[in-house]
Image 1 (cartoon, helix red, strand yellow):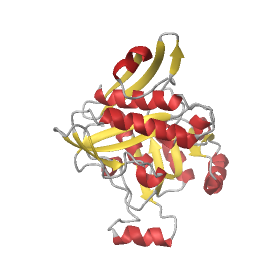
Image 2 (cartoon, helix red, strand yellow; image 1 turned 135 degrees about the vertical axis):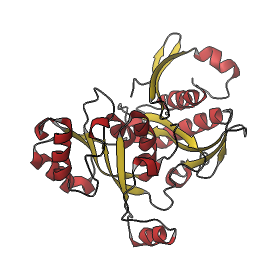
Image 3 (tube, helix red, strand yellow; image 1 turned 30 degrees about the vertical axis):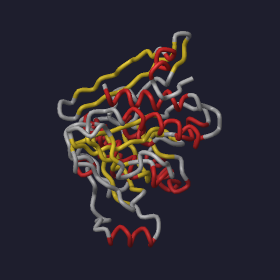
Image 4 (cartoon, rainbow, N blue to C red; image 1 turned 180 degrees about the vertical axis):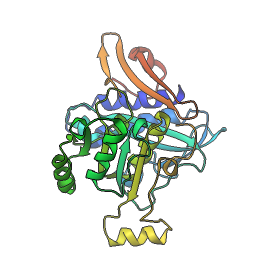
Length: 308
């Protein structure tokens, strides 16, 4: 519940910026709210996946110590808003995300900002390989799920770099759901019953891949990745740091621990606000959906975060 409070705070802070066209303002509000609540959580945490390097944020940067300093020792991955553009444009699908695992168990992307990803649900675990072509993987997925390829749906980030990928997937007869942002949610959807997504393809953020891995591990699903340097400078930096660029990163490579954290957006009512959270624990495989009501006037009496 301590972690749930952090995502609730980030979501409510960011929701005040919905549709205002300012993704920087929305992200800053979410970061500040999440950081404030995280400082009170009983743990000795280190941010492995943070905001600083990617979004130039002054808080929740990689290497920052988080929590009240008491055990347990943990690694932390955060994305106060997965989908800042979605929030700024007033669209659905943005999430506030946090993942926590035992110290030393979370993959540190280092200089590798992007990776090629493939994610599937529990029934297709082990059937696909990120090194194969999309066509081969869709036929393998078809066999694993006992459904024709034309009944499968792939989720892909709508980016120019994916033009050839989209063309190939369309040629197989499979359906495509293009998303403008938020590939953490896209990856999680492959393992969520009823979401209507069977596989995720494409190149996206490595930090988002780690966050998705934490969730998919809890669900018994799978994500695979290949680090994708954007240029020769980034490639050489990765090699110098000891990263194996041709090696497949599995779910367990991205998050080794046993403890990992889709949904209605923040709603405002006459009494305050409501939020919905999805909490996952990989050790037990338990998934909890939490609906919460927040009396904002009462919160204002003791909280340093402004939700008004």
